[in-house]
Image (cartoon, rainbow, N blue to C red):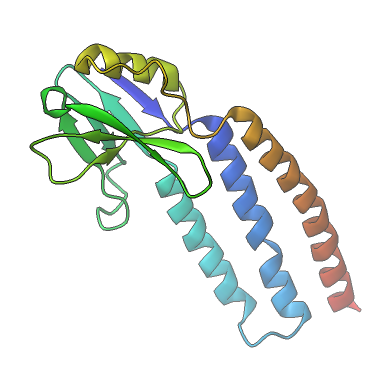
Length: 179
């Protein structure tokens, strides 16, 4: 059995971006006397962080019988529903372009009513694709991840710049409130 989790660079980058986008909001609400109380924003930020953590806890499980996308038991099924396909059910891997010009791949099966997205943001993507090729007999030579690591490094760098502005914003808001 092989288990592939979402790449750490993706999890860290998206978590940091979430913090950078939301952390200043309660401070700004207090500073501007916004009608929404800061305590309510803190609750929303905490709930959002739990939802983000749940979404980033996806794992792809490959065993002798099937490929499965699953989430931990604490993640409600209505929030993130996984899927499973037996290897013998898979007849093709269809390529589709995204709205931004990227390429994604879907497993198709004559017995399934819908196609299933090949998880593309996992650590060990090439190993996973090689196992898929071995188990299904599908040619996966041209299959590449949707986003390259350098894209997330650029986003992480921009996020760190955002954190600098957040720090300045929070510092300004808290020192002005203290006066």
